[in-house]
Length: 75
Image (cartoon, rainbow, N blue to C red):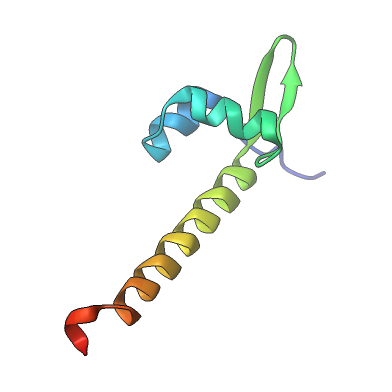
């Protein structure tokens, strides 16, 4: 039998990522992160949270690299 994956609330994700809970709800609504409805609350699989964090980290690193390559003081 496969272990049950931990599920995160939008509030927990918001705290973990230092964003507003409404931002997390918008991500869910927009389909940026998948969630399941349990009763009348939404929960996000932990693996989905990790995917989002890694994706955002990658964007941040790309932007930092781009800014470094375009630094006018280096010319």
